[in-house]
Length: 414
Image 1: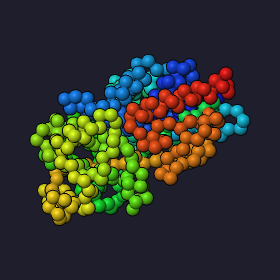
Image 2 (image 1 turned 180 degrees about the vertical axis):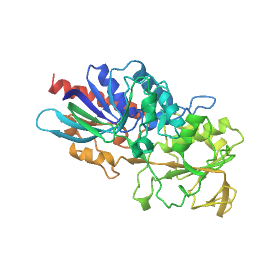
Image 3 (image 1 turned 90 degrees about the vertical axis):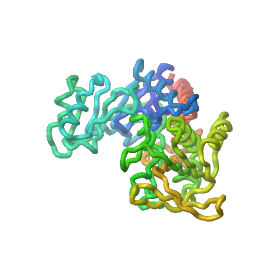
Image 4 (image 1 turned 60 degrees about the vertical axis):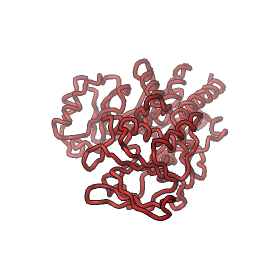
């Protein structure tokens, strides 16, 4: 059984930062990430600068990923999840389950032969990482692998010159000993229920801001899914899945206002003729430059206080948005070529059972409470597992967690 100083659950920006800090402090660290890539949601964020920096913090993410790629003795397990944690007076025994598909990060040279073989064979299971600073740069989506489903010899294995790809017909598991656990399991973007009043999942030109982020990151533009054209008239709808008593989600996700206003200002900077409307309840203060961004948004965007009631599709692919106009004193329906839903941050339900095994409680919104008694047992919660945070806050909280873990390890074990 392998022994580690700390197991970090979650390979997002919080988990990676905490792991790097602990490694700099001389601790052995194992990072567990359930997906094919480390970096989490933050790695997908594109730079939102206009003619000046809007402090979106994308550059902070790239700095962490670059350090990880260039000089990191960390140990990773991607395509993996923690299925059990137990302790009988000594170290924690952590049972880790790995998926049937994986890419060996020590052997992979990022040559791309696997992607070419997968595409040539008509499949789409191999995908690129969202950042060039992520290694391995190529990953496998298990659920997309038709070779795995049909029991055929995978073309990617034959194509890989380094033998870095492993595809089995079942999952595997192993145990490690750990003196401490950092739970950085992150969040899940709210998924609008279906059917929903927004038309999401039904109207092709109603998408989430996360989907728009991916377009900006990969293509450098935001397009309408229906025809791949750049829209001239766009609506942002705030607080989707937040501050909604009907859904039992009354908390504010905090980071969404600054996130969407930066995106809107970035888009109108790239496409000056684009007409952007933002429907909102309130605008949350998102930092020391809030006033400057807010005034710029009021000048360059159409800001409507109040959320739309209904969304309807039209024959030409536009979305009719029904809302109350204070200026006209009545409800009107206005057509938009693209509607972006700014979805809130949800607790990660998969991590809930793991937290219970570690003796952690959740607050009324479902996020973990960072309790003192847990820290005394070597269990520390960090980042958005505790509640909504932006990238800079996650990085700061990760460093706090790493120092707290060092104090625990030095006081108990050394």
